[in-house]
Length: 336
Image 1 (cartoon, rainbow, N blue to C red):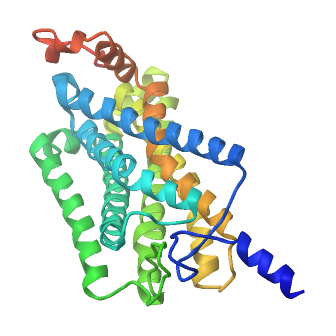
Image 2 (image 1 turned 180 degrees about the vertical axis):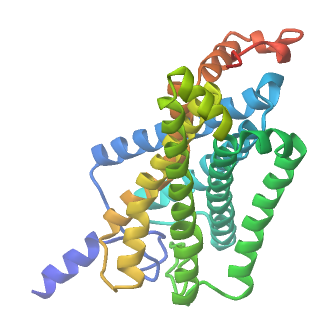
């Protein structure tokens, strides 16, 4: 029995080779490592380059300089940085079950994660508010929601994200854990865990669902106005709805729905772990975290499916027509 125990201990691998004081490393078959890394690399590349196309397109082409697209740009910047700074290291840690990048970068990585995910969520909230006013109050929207106002909203969004992260760190919102060497753990305590659940998920999702429900109701009313009498009544009682505004609202509504589907499993795991004390298996938690991060790479796919301007700008990019003189004035969409 003692010999068997010694043999089992010899099979255990650790994150670092200076004894068994470091974290134990989970060993997987080589084929599993290959599959996981191929999928991870594809996800990271999709997130980085997909959002980079969005950033370049909206920044370069003047026709895309609208309040809504600037908010989409802010979302793309947050998602791009998630793919560049957060995803690669989190994925490597989840595959290797070890953190090889040091304690200082572990702290910085956690800070970037909090800031960027908060910025992404706040951008989605402001996009929902933008769509609500564009559809339900188009006259007010045209008069008040200008480019400078939108830049101010974007600045506020990022400021709130940084301030929220600073508050968590300043008031020591992370739980007291003593990780072994080779681990990177940033777990919110009960108070801040509850605050984060409410502020980062429940409130934003509730607000976005409410706004898009209102948008759908108004859009259906406009769609039913097909007779001349109805059109006159609609003109007298409700402001006209542009086809482009309706399509943009539909597309961005899908973005919000995908966000909900991608992040809901992660927050369910968080609730089970932190509030119900139900131990979620590590592989399940990692899968939910991967799904949440994958949301940052899915948004450009949605734009490619529903936005003709995204497909046109992508063609201009890959054919280097974007480098030609006056390319910023290219017409990417028809006003309707």
